[in-house]
Amino acid sequence: MVGEDQAHKDIADCDRLAAEYVKSEAGKTVAKNTAGGAAAGTVIGGAAGAVTGHLGRGAAVGAAAGAAAGLVRGVSKSSEPSPIHKRFVEKCLRERGYEPLGWE
Image (cartoon, rainbow, N blue to C red):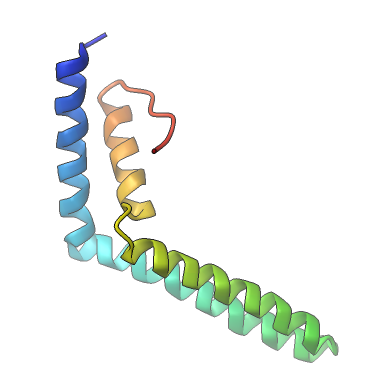
């Protein structure tokens, strides 16, 4: 509705704002809390398995959670925008009246 030129400008503006946010202390805190939550899940899963007598199952759950944490860290260090960056851009575009469907 706004035209291709304006849409590209809005996307670029939201992308720039997201990059600034991710570099800010608030963005770093969100990323740190996400990774910390996965690590805490690993510890809790292992402890629960040990208490219930299912140490192997608890360890498997812990390993899965650890893998998820590693994936989050790996994605954030790759050349692709982090999940936080993507969510920021999508929110920014929604606030401007767009309906983003995903990333390629």
